[in-house]
Amino acid sequence: MLIRYKKNLEKIAMGLLSFMPEEKDVKKLLQTIKEYETNPNWHLFLWKEDDVLGAIGLRIDNEINAVIQHISVNPSHRNLGIGKKMVNEINKLYEEKYAVCASESTQQFYTKCDEPEEGNDKE
Image 1 (tube, rainbow, N blue to C red):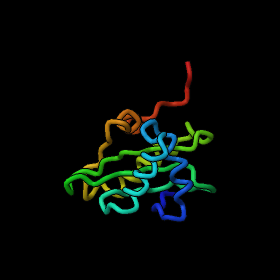
Image 2 (cartoon, rainbow, N blue to C red):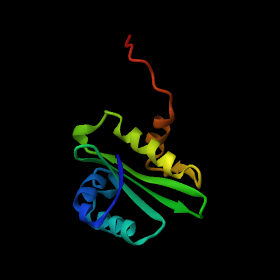
Image 3 (spheres, rainbow, N blue to C red):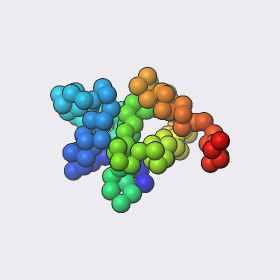
Image 4 (tube, helix red, strand yellow):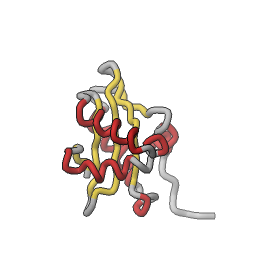
């Protein structure tokens, strides 16, 4: 389930965002979290099942685009479809008002989420 970021989830959110290559530096990570907390055009969500397993962040550009700029899943829960679920939920939340797209750093994953799923038969 997608939940909005709140300050009391800051450490969890920072931990998840730190898995993104451009967020490895602590100073950069603190700036990113502060931007999500203070900029009304930046929206951060966490994916919660039993625990918080992922984070997805976007920014609204020119009241036209909702640009997904962060997607991160706890490494021990990767390849289970959580990232794709987050992207799909963001699409549902924002598609009526904005054109949902990806930033350069999330484009490859975002495109992969849009591909039709292949069957389970392995050759």
